[in-house]
Image (cartoon, rainbow, N blue to C red; front, side):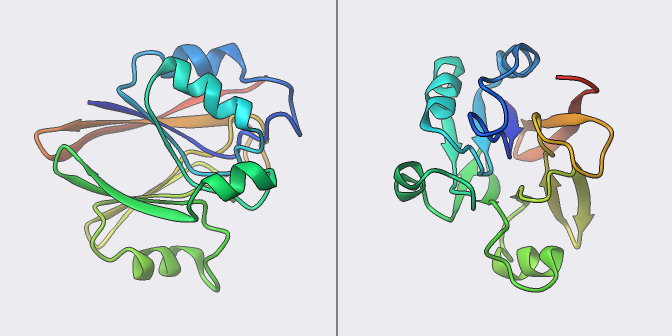
Length: 164
């Protein structure tokens, strides 16, 4: 099973629509996971045309959209426990706060920083897909793809683009 993991799209407040390279990169994913700062509800509608979507609220989402989404959620897919949050509600050190908040998750997905990040910490994979539309301290735009196989995280990769 392939997961397309995206965060911090900031559409329409930064750019008008989802870039084609993102749509084509998510096309074969079985599930799209959005870690917040979707900003506009039309983004979720467009992603749902590609496939099923699980999403959480970010700190920049329009009020109606924010009200329809949880701040965090935890679910299981193919035997892998996944925690999903934007990250803006974590006080203090983000990484410590995430592992403390989701002690039973195999995979913790977060956004907010716009910086692609992956690291195993005591058996948990912490993954930030970066942002496909707003790069901050990176020289690329990105989202992530994760393959789940036989109850394990089989592969993790970033899809990167230097220009929009």
